[in-house]
Length: 154
Figure 1 (cartoon, rainbow, N blue to C red):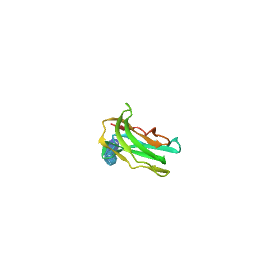
Figure 2: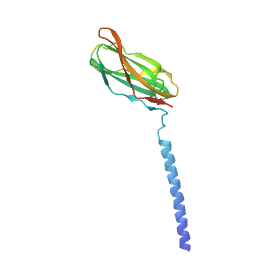
Figure 3: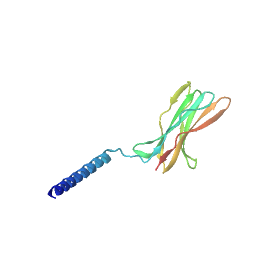
Figure 4: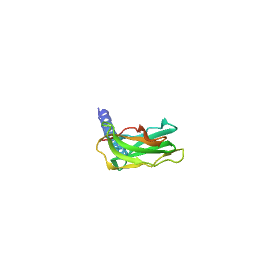
């Protein structure tokens, strides 16, 4: 009987020690885990061939220090085009912000413009960056609306 009591006492102490060790490890893991972003999605769509040797890509993202501050980026392949981007609400399809245009390309190249700042915080919702381009074959006209993956602000 004495041996059984000793065994139970040893097992109880080991269980408590194991529980404390496990709790400490979990607390350390939680403390070391990176902070999660409130946003999801975003990134680049990938080049879409449009016409006449022109391909466009559209990228979306957000500022790490302000998840409601969205950015857009234009990728393009082509010459004599003026690529432009807008931030669009994915649910209502209304323009939220006009990023503007990069300016006319003078050489045929694959290029990504700089990340363009929305200059405003957006409310909670789902958004995408829409990219198109002005071209001037015989007349000036706007082509395409290539959409980035949706970015969610929550």
